[in-house]
Structure formats: structure tokens, C-alpha cells
Amino acid sequence: QSWQRQESIIYLIGSGSEYIQSDENQILPSIFSLIPKLNFSNNLIIKTTLQVLGQYSNWLSNHQDILQNCVHLCINGLSNSELIESSSIALKELIKENRIYMSKYLHDIFPIMKNVLENVHIQSNDRIRCLTIIGYILSVHPSKIVIEYLNILLSPEVNKLLNYLSDIENNQNAIIRKENICTTLNFISVLITAIGYYDDQNNGIENEQQLNTSNTSEV
Image (cartoon, rainbow, N blue to C red; front, side, top):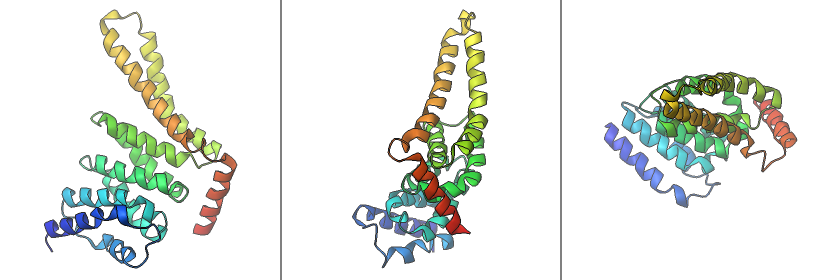
């Protein structure tokens, strides 16, 4: 089949996402099981597929056996500069609905996200989205792990902030310095807010117990 025909079918599947019950088990499992068999010959069909995955994030939360293939597609897409936006949008939606299950992908996602964040050409919205993804995943991990990853991410940002503040006497770069300070503070704020987002709605001890149960079930 041509990739255009495949893309049209994927669009058709996505168009019905609003009307699908989360417990639908007759048709969608067979459809989503075909994802690994699709011919991803170009970025357009990958973008379309990622868009549909995000639309079905609620349904996928009840079908974690299928979710695994979807996650791998998102993670692989993050390594392609042309797919960062669509991959991060889909991944963010999947994590919001499946954060306990998705927590096991921390070691797979974090190095890629770190590389994306260090890319000077990354768009502001993509940067915020990637930070949010990391925060959502960390939100269900024990405090020790959260602090470990915060040190990796925030130490360079804090050093940047200190350098900007120490350069306060240089009036020639006042506007640029102010922009850099705001960007750095926004980086820190987005990450901390994402980590605390679920803590405002759930008990931290309960999250850790659920995480341990999830990890045990994988063994």
C-alpha cells in the first residue's frame, strides 16, 4: 500500500477517537496491533500516527499491552528534529493518562529528552513540553530518584542564573540578560510544577506503593 493510503486510514481512525469508550475491546485492539507493521516510509505518516496515539491516550490507558508499541514510536520520534513536536505532544498525553505505567521508561526517555533540551534550536513550546514530560514521569518516583534527576537538570540552570545575576553591572547586555534570566526561571518553574502537579491530587506514599506494585508485576 502507498503511504498516502495508509495515512488516510490512520486519519479515519483518529476521527472517531472522541466517540470511543475506554473499555472498547472488539475492534481497536486489532487495529492498534498493526502499528508495528506500518510502513513508516516518511515523517508525514509518522506525524499522523503520533497524532492519533495522543488522541487515544485515554483508551490506551486501559490497554497497556498495546501501549508499549506506541511508547516506542514516540521515543524514537524524539531523536528526529522534524518529529520532536508531534512525538512530545503524543508522549505527554500518554504519560498524563498512564503515569504509573510510563514511569518505567524513565531511563529510556530521560537521555533523549536531555539531548533535546540541550539543542539550541529547539522551539520554546517543545522545550516546555519536554520538561513537562520529565516532570510527569518523575512525579511518581521516590524522592531520592527525583532529587538525583533534578540535580542533573537544574545544576547547569542554576549556574547559568548565577552567572546572569553576577553580570548585572554590564548595562550593555541588560535586555539580553533579562531575557536569559526569565528563560532560566521558566525552565525551573515548568519542571518543578510538572513534578508537583500530581502531588496536589494524590498522596505521595500511595504513588510510591503503586509504582512498586507496577514494577513487581513486570518481573
